[in-house]
Length: 111
Image (cartoon, rainbow, N blue to C red; front, top):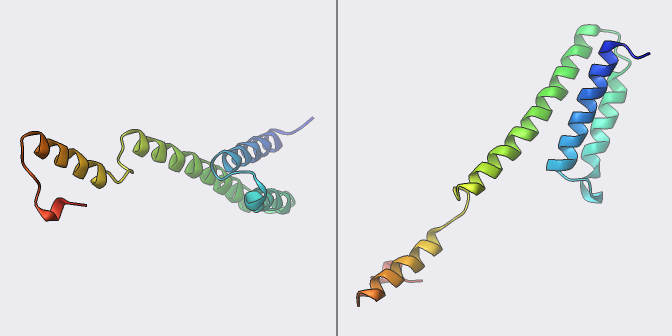
């Protein structure tokens, strides 16, 4: 039977791998991220210092939270069109508006 600590470690490990695969990717060129996580968990599995092991587990949990939060923020920015450069779109709208009333924008606004 697994101890509570090893179940907690396994859950953090799974959550981190899931976040890495979802937000970074799992194709061949990005496989080294997953490999690094796996190596770190195996390397730290034998830590005798319980405080150091706890710190490493907290670091993995924090990194998972960071990956998920950055991805969520990016989705929000795109959903509100904040991350999109809309200057070209605005120039087209201004040109159409000016043309509809028989005007032409100064050269500063022309493409």
